[in-house]
Amino acid sequence: MSKAAELAALIGGQKALGDKNFIINGDMRIFQRATAATAASAYDTVDRFGFGESTDGAFTSEKSTDSPIGSGNSLKLQVTTADTSLSASQYAYFFQAIEGQNLQSLQYGTSSAKTLTLSFWVKSNKTGTYTINVYKQDSTAYNLPIEYTISSANTWEKKQIKITPTAGSTSFITSAGGAIADDNGIGFQVGFGLAWGSNFHGTNNTWSSNTSHYSTANAVNWMDSTSNNFYLAQVQLEIGEVATAFEHEDIGTTLAKCQRYFTKSYNQGTAVATATAVGAVYKVMDAAMNYGTENVVFPCSMRATPTVGIYSPVTGALGKFDSNTSGGTTDLNLTTVNIGDNGFSGQSNNQAVSQNAYMRWHYTASAEL
Image 1 (cartoon, helix red, strand yellow):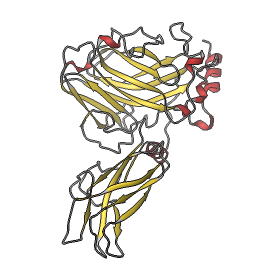
Image 2 (cartoon, one colour):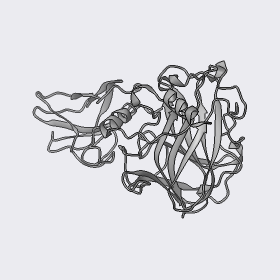
Image 3 (cartoon, rainbow, N blue to C red):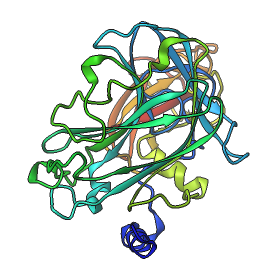
Image 4 (cartoon, helix red, strand yellow):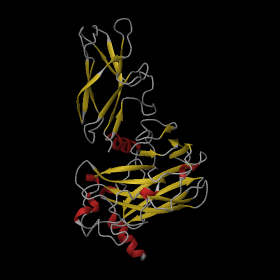
């Protein structure tokens, strides 16, 4: 491609208003749930990235200040229990799922479907072939595995991967079945493979109607040693033929984007279920009653009606609140009612709360894809 053509592809490909990165929290700045090493399962640490693991081993995720640019953060993964021989159905990976209504500019399902470029910095002690995958779930489901190589051990390397709508000379994405629904469901997810059994092997850089094709037979088994680590930083997915410089946005903007999917009452630097009253929902009862109720308004409208968790500020116990009624009773039962996209109510049904006593508790709300 000529320089002029590259420039035209870049200029024509960027999203309006400079918001070019489809990945939220790609610079790994927001860790609302926990920052310390935590067993990887679903959503545990870094915001907007989920984890999937089904092996005989285990790994953790955590926040790291090891960075390719000498400042900022990365996501660190560490094998804690090894699996040296994967069965056909075993796997380990992590991913970010993206809302369909945020992907309409891709024009999937038409002959004008856009090419994307995924760029990121990666470092691992284990070199070799790894894969990313794009799993488009809307309409007809298709999967695209693409190989990349970590060449030097313990060295930050920048990768650029082009994701074309006709990869492998296919027409899945440019036909009607390639369309992405304009709604708040999953449009597609971008996955980073760590270990994939043979049931999940497809053809490199080829869209497949077999939605189990997350990887290829060439990919390493990263789970094979407790010495293995994996660092990821500055993940960017953008329209265009080549990667542009990573888009740094202010932390308030990134946090607000993350809070659409997960929010909490704890301070941002405090892990969920910590025993602390700082930031807790608090209400003083103006009259004695058999139950107390307090309403919560979320920082922003969430993607969908969330799953709400309640935590005691004294013990961190789930489903409990604290009160100074009856001589300082702790860990009373609290239920959630009237849960909606914008808030909910916490209610201490059938537990007497005296006048001038307080109720206090923490909450989390999750509307992850």
